[in-house]
Amino acid sequence: MIIRVKRPSDVPSSEITPEDVYLNRRRFIRQAAAGAAGLALAPSALAAMEWPSPAGPGQQVDYSKLKSELGEPVNSYKDITHYNNFYEFGTSKTDPAENSGDFHPRPWTVAVEGHVKNPGSYHLEEFLAPYKLEDRVYRMRCVEAWSIVVPWRGFPLADLVKRVEPTGDAKFVQFTTIVRPSQMPGQRTDVLPWPYIEGLRLDEATNPLTLLVTGLYGKDLPNQDGAPLRLIVPWKYGFKGIKSIVRIRFVEDMPHNTWWVVNPHEYGFYANVNPNVPHPRWSQATERRLGEWRRRKTLMFNGYGDQVAQMYAGMDLHRWF
Amino acid sequence: MRTKRVVLALKVLLWVGALTPTVWLGAGAYWGWLGANPVEKLEHVTGMSALIGLLATLLVTPLRRVTGWNPLIRLRRPIGLFAFYYVALHFSIWMGLDLGLNLSWITDDIRKRPYITVGFTGFLLLIPLALTSTRKSIRRLGKRWVTLHRLIYVVPALGVIHYYWSVKADVRIPILMGVIYATLMLVRIPGWVESRARRSARAARARREPRGSPASREGSGTVPVGATD
Ligand code: HEM
Figure 1 (tube, rainbow over the protein chains, first blue to last red):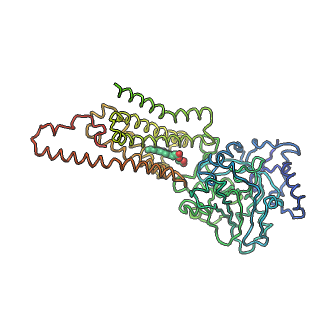
Figure 2 (spheres, rainbow over the protein chains, first blue to last red):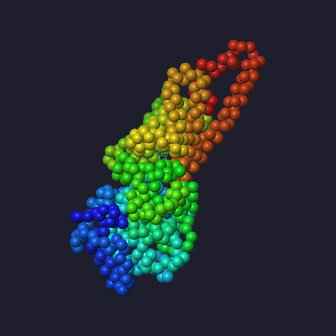
Figure 3 (cartoon, chains in turn orange, red):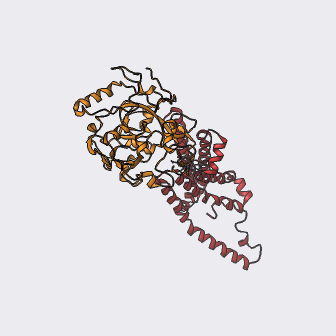
């Protein structure tokens, strides 16, 4: 399999987009045929770029061989699915894999609301129909100073934003996780206030790197990784990547994201990966990549500075941590 | 003789129990089933073993008091030493595996990260206790040994604070540990009050009676293990 990786200068992401991953395409075609036909596809800057096809129809992509744009191998499926922070299923890293078996990610409804011209509430399939899913390898850096490399499958949030047409009052996007204590044992405790809330500034939401994710390793998201729909913002700490999303709301004021509310002294709204701004209790200068013994240096904006730094030009990142 | 055998049996149990985490971690590291982040697993299991060991050390005297079975005291030193062993292992894993012996990271963390500073203080305070845990030291240091070993009341508190500060949000188990520690300290208070009363009564008697009487000699030269805790 050939995966050509573009230079960071011409790639706004570490995308590896096997554009013809045929399963993907079949699903897309099926969905398009099922009624979404006629909806104009909003090709993102990324999707518009040309990519060599790593696998022809009928061929399978070996996801475990994929690499990031920096040449980092992806982590194993086992690591990605058995070392999770998803407090809805418990606070230890293995709890989500162990306690999410009873969670039913389908049927699922997603509401898009707030300051948009086209609000609505959709069945997941309906919600996803207009978008072209792609695979991208991203680093994920947890605020706890570990990191992992994951081949996600999803579509740019920017495509959704374009489709729902935010009005001038929309300055931020707020995301909400489902509340379902009967299937999420962590929600029967009060370690965090439920529901989990996250948010992005509108320009962050429309940055081509930001993904709404439905799968990984070419498969649907497992429950413990945030099925059926989650956010991935690779230059921010992992907790920004809210899981099991049921509501996307365009708002005027900065959303009060959960960790910020819980501990405003330690977690902010922006949560950009930044080796120079320590967490009050530990350093963020280095991280342990799962599967490695030695720590590695943490990269500014998790290595995505070229694509995102300009959004924060002139901002005091020590203050807006 | 019976007592001796029971104590021996308890010691065997103690060794088996105390070495279980080490064996488990060793096997896990060797066969690779410590999960996605083995360094963290090693750190967490040794840290937890250390804290449980410290609390178990504090449990011996109250247990002895409740059961009235004094030979229990012979378990205190090995339990304390196992606790020290796990703290030292915990520290070595942190220093060697987590920070890869990078001296500037190590000193930076110890200076700047309060949870590390507190844990490190606990580790430092345990060193003289471990070094003076021999019978010879007990004899040589006499009363000063008792004073020195009162540090064992402080170290678990540092361990609990260290643990509490190391977690992100779920403080339920650190708090539980804190409650256990507080309980183990509180149950000592009646004993302390009693022995203090006994001491002052003895001192009063000594003032009334001439020097060299049996009362004033009492306590000197005897092994003070457990005398005041
Ligand atoms: C009295 C001495 C100490 C005790 C009782 C102790 C105990 C603990 C406990 C109970 C934990 C949490 C385990 C868990 O989350 O399951 C922990 C974590 C940790 N300890 Fe210690 N510790 C001590 C000293 C130290 C020292 C000297 C260092 C390093 C200088 C250290 C570094 C750490 C680190 C890095 C963690 C992991 C924190 C994390 O999860 O991010 N500890 N310790």
